[in-house]
Length: 484
Image (cartoon, rainbow, N blue to C red; front, side, top):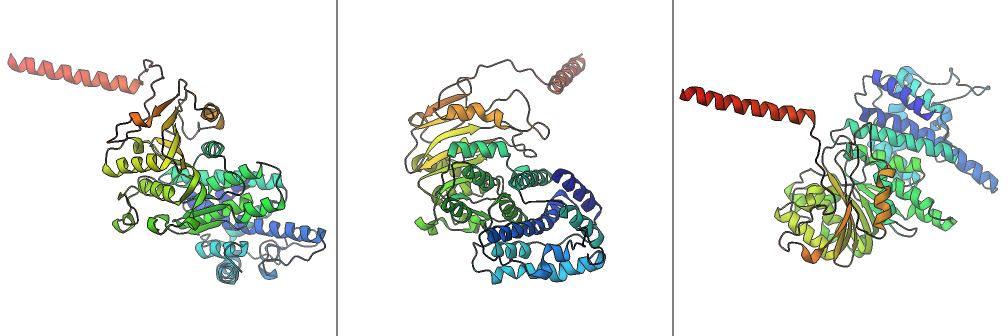
């Protein structure tokens, strides 16, 4: 039901002059979906209050509740076409009244850790881009059919919302910017193994995939008490995000997964001076896939002891600094970090090895991130003691990864099993840090255990070589003819 509804909405948005890409489709579907979700959430809270003999006061004023403006019903429970706004009337109501009303929540909320404040933030950042009030009416009618009352319904909806974010990532220039493959995130969380009571942080939160999956992992980790649930809701998950759309999508993604007031801040993480980070600012667990390939300005680089324009290297310095002593991290980074010879990379590897125990490196195949051709690794480290030995695992698959053939959890099962004991295998090995070149600290993932097989070349490569040999033969023949 959810899947077909999302497809129908995309078809409607495709016809609308205000929406030109998958990014617009996700953004515009999101705010309507969010308001319907809030309506069902309010109904759940009213029912729960009634069962305990309490009275629930709705967050939203009557004239802005879903059943008033979006989907007024007649006596038979069907859409009341006399009361339901459409066309220019609906467009004007949404732009002139609805959005400004929700925007004010940011000022009127009691504190930043409330759902009211998050509603205000979301509608301060978003704009209605749907230009046709008739298209908007169609979308509202489709979303009104959805229900988010049971756990199964919420789970299905959040799963499909993730799919939309994935498509949005694929539509962008860099698929990894918005979307990290969920099997990889789940695997990283299994290895890092956060516990209830610990704080979990992502300084490059994107669509909040790491925090959503960590929430699901901890919700299933044991039988939860009321205190545990409050801790998970308010004192566990923290994030920062620079880009407006990613910030909104990440916040809504967490709310749709069940975290009512996510502690995500809309800010440039790298604008924070490392020298200003104090003990109270630190976190127990860091899970992140920071953007790579970006170039930060000179004034941003001044916030870091190791100066570099490479965004991912600045984020890694931030993560090392903001992690508590004894804290654990799983961070995705370009595999060139392991071997780059520039001064910043060498210095950063030295800092990481001296200040943290880099116990595991997962070397991922090309194509892990759809739309991003770079190869990546995952660094698993704990802060507080120097690295003595690094265990490497090279994920070698018998297929090429891509849009229609993506990474799955089964692919990573061998890694998860071996990582517990850090055993050697055809795909895994350990290196002693004392044996590293002490000038470069080169950590290249060169597997000494893999049996070399004669690789079958692709037809294109063979044809290219034949062409080169033909050209070389022609040159030789030409030279001989000239001599004659």
